[in-house]
Image 1 (cartoon, rainbow, N blue to C red):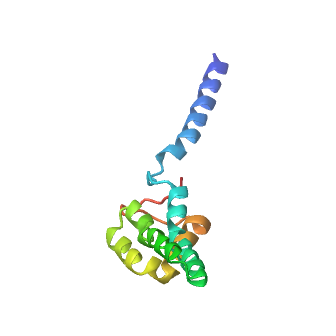
Image 2 (cartoon, rainbow, N blue to C red; image 1 turned 60 degrees about the vertical axis):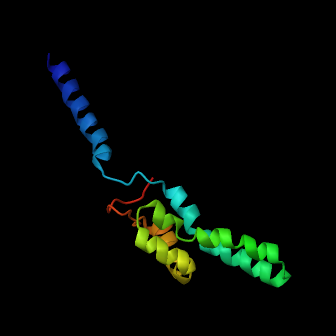
Image 3 (tube, helix red, strand yellow; image 1 turned 90 degrees about the horizontal axis):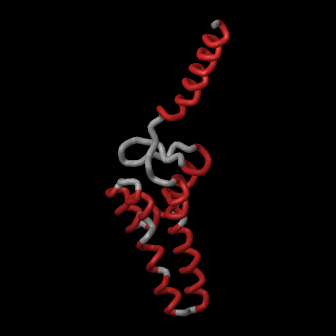
Length: 120
């Protein structure tokens, strides 16, 4: 009878350890999606430079698509005011987009509008 009790205690300890990870609160938003959307201002600048160097109006026109997506990551996580600022200033002059990428990829401190970290 002693073996059964010991096994039950070990099993209970294992279940408690496994449940620790389930109690963390995180954003349902995807980290990979945020990283891709945060790179849009940089893509817009590269396409714009290529269009300007080649003097091709079609390429310069295509630049408008990633420019309009510059604030998409902020809209995705629910920060609408910041999303509008990023859209009209091309990622807050690329500095804001670079900070967001750093927070997402390196430190993991990027949060959504509810304050939950975007970690998955």
